[in-house]
Image (cartoon, rainbow, N blue to C red):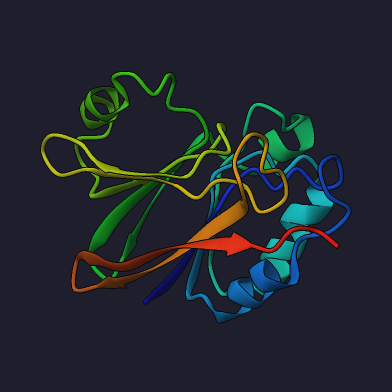
Length: 167
């Protein structure tokens, strides 16, 4: 099962449109996981129209309309893999321990907020993934998103995709 992980799209504040490589991955994925900060409902509508299955949450920059349509935390099972999605996890210091305590029933937690790609494993085996942002690199060298495969209750082939600079 092909997964697309993204977050912090911030359209139209940080970009006028989503990058073409991200749109192609939405179309190719079996499940799209978005960890919040959509910023406008039109972006959510676009994901809903294109994704086979969308699992998304609201972020701190999402207003009342998006908060009415999305949860703060979402959970999904993909081919036996228990995945959670949340926007904020707090400071990087102690993140693994905090998340393992908050989400003991998950195998993978996808989060956003910082725009900093992250891939670690907490005590007990919880995999923490932040795909960064496909539109706003902030202090990072690239705009990014992730893809992965869920197979038989396991996560495989996790890839961080770096987008080219805007022309």
